[in-house]
Image (cartoon, rainbow, N blue to C red; front, side):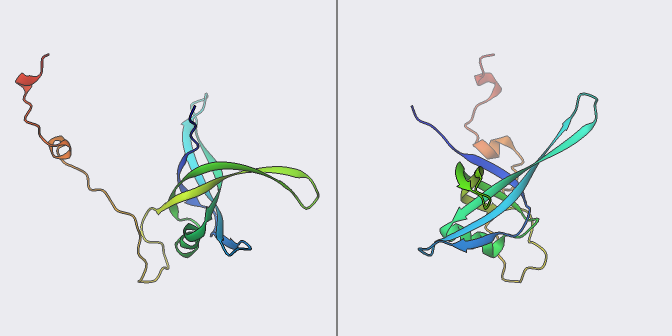
Length: 147
């Protein structure tokens, strides 16, 4: 049986990406993004819950994240969940769950304080005013519908 491990997130960066390099020279960017949800609790009060996600990006994507992402920036991340085990400084075994990004799209407007050479790879879809324009008019009229 096939399986699927895919994550899609839209959130805001909690801090600037940190980039390290492996022994073979591959770049690895690490950063976190926050996603929020609003809901009404049992008493009718409006609540908001924020979830923090650890993200890692590798290779060219890591370099792009370092160059263009900054704290507070809204971003779309697509990737997979990975859980790894490690031993901390005190010798205690720990587990960390992170999202390994394979796609990143910068969202929102141009961030404050960037230079004039900044370019975003985000394309904005224009809303279609008429459903016939969106799907094409196949020439179906009300008399063609059997009910």
